[in-house]
Structures are given as C-alpha cells and as structure tokens.
Amino acid sequence: MNDWLEIHRGDAPLVVAFPHTGTILPALVDSKFRSHWLARKDADWWIHELYDFAIAMGATTVRTQVSRSVIDVNRDPSGASLYPGQATTALCPTETFDDEPLYVERSEPDDEEIARRRTLYFDPYHGALSGELERLRAMHGRVVLYDAHSIRSVVPRLFDGILPQFNIGSFDGASCAQPLTDAIAEIAAASPYDHVVNGRFKGGWTTRHYGRPADGIHAIQMELACRGYLHEPEDPFTEANWPAPYDAGHAAPLRAALTDMLQACITFAKGHS
Figure 1: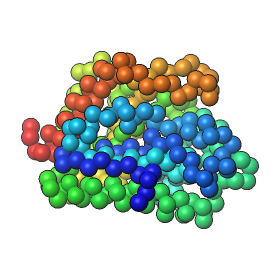
Figure 2: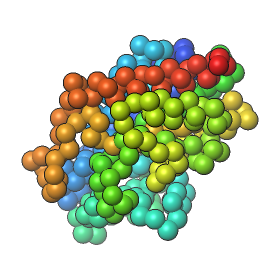
Figure 3: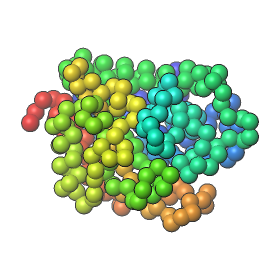
C-alpha cells in the first residue's frame, strides 16, 4: 500500500488527476536538495482543494503526494521532451521553473536513481490511473480524464507575458473529441476570465498517453493561472511569501466555472448533448 498515493473512487465517467500537488520529499532524497522550499516551490499549490467538489459529483480522483521535484509523473518516462525547442523541466528535474538548481552539487539523480524513482512513484501512480480509467470505461463505455494543473501567472523562462486564466490542452485535438474541447472552451468564454486552447500548454504526457478517443478515453488538460484562487505576490517569490494561501472567497467564481466544466465532461462521457 502506497500511503503517498491518494485515490477516491466514484462511479461517474470522469477521472480527475492531480500529478503536481504533492509536497512530500522522501527521506532518501530530501537531504540532496539545496532547499526544501525550492523543492516544493513549483507545486500546483492547493489545486486538489480547489477541485474538492469533484468527489461529490461522482468523479474519481487520483493524486500523488510526492513532490514533482522528486519525479514528475506528467513527463515522458523515456526522458524525451514534451515541447522540443522550448524550456521545460525533466522527468526528475534538476532546476526550478526559474532555473534555480535544486540539488546540492554532485547530488543530481543518475540513471540508476531515476529508474528507482520510476519504480517507486511513477509506475504506481500510472498503474492507479490506468486502472481507474479501465474500471470506469467498463462501466460506461466512454470516460474523460481531466488532468488538473496550475502555475504562476508569470514565469518568463517558460512563457512570455501573463498566462491566460484557463489554458485548455487537447494535444492539438488528438487526445479528445472536439465537442468536449468546445464545451469546456465555451464555459471559459462565458466566465469572467480569459482562456486559450492549445496555447503554451497543449497537454503533458498524461493527456498525450491516455487520450485515445477511438478507444473511448478522452483526455484533456487544464492549466490554471494561480491568480484565480490566491493572491500572487509581486516578484521576487521568496520563502516568506510563497506559496500564498488559498483564498476561498476569491476562488468562488473560478470554482463555479470549473464545476460547470467537470459537469460538461460527465455529460459528454454519458453521450448527452
């Protein structure tokens, strides 16, 4: 039993995945990081709390509590870049989004250590995710995988300017049927927030790997700008001001739109117009 792997099983044809909300730094790794704060800095802060309504809707949720700095379960396990030619982080990152080194000198993970982390954390997470998708597909015939993410609104190393609030990724239409993408984009357009479809974030390895519309699995990624549910500090981001606390009142309009989006996923999977 993996106590770091959190699974809530529902019966609706929807799986919500949380690959980057973890903050656990396992004992064999934590002393190798230059700073525990840096090793947690790029977490998708509070996203599992923002989406806590999903369980009441009947969705299944799968969440790793291990920090993405230990191993990023939304990266290609082969180590291949998801965005060739653009800055991104690796399967076992060695720097933060701001290009700050994560490890004490000469403590970076080698191939053997990366393989160990894959076995301990990557494989069980994806074993759980694929198992839940197959369970629900057997029940419904069609299922949606919604990969839930967030990131700071401004990260110059990764993208220019200010990120839209809703960043919808369908791997340029390959990972899910167009009507599902359209339904989510329409909800975003009707909200008080800006959005983009297949912009800087087209979907990570999870979306690309599991999205097989012809086989009844439709995968979509939602990358949110953090400003919709917390108050982002001005630069510099420091241990004193980051992460900012979750603000339930501030998040309420965003949660309303996200609730409609998850309901649209369920409606689509059930085959209703």
